[in-house]
Length: 79
Image (cartoon, rainbow, N blue to C red; front, side):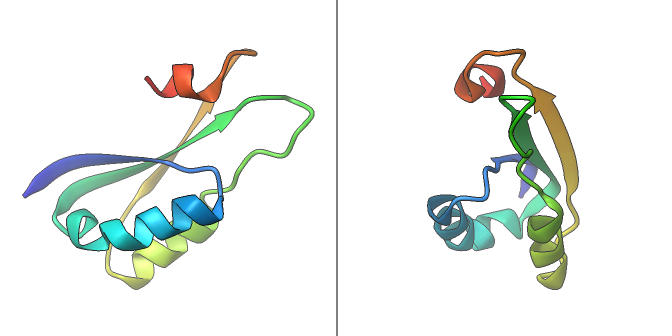
C-alpha cells in the first residue's frame, strides 16, 4: 500500500502516458496530490481539473496543489 503519491502535472502528452502507466500504482495510494507550478505570471496555469476528473472516474480521490516558481525553474520548485 502506497501512502502518499505526488503527481507533477503540466498537461503534456508525455505526462498523460506516464500517468496511464502508473494507474495500478496510483490505485494503492491513500492520498494523491496533483502538483502544478506557475512558472510565469503571463502564461496560463496548467489545470489539474481534468486529471482530477479522470482519477475520480477510476475511483481515485485527489487534491490539487498550486506552487509558485517565483521565477525559478519548475523542477527546482518540485524538488
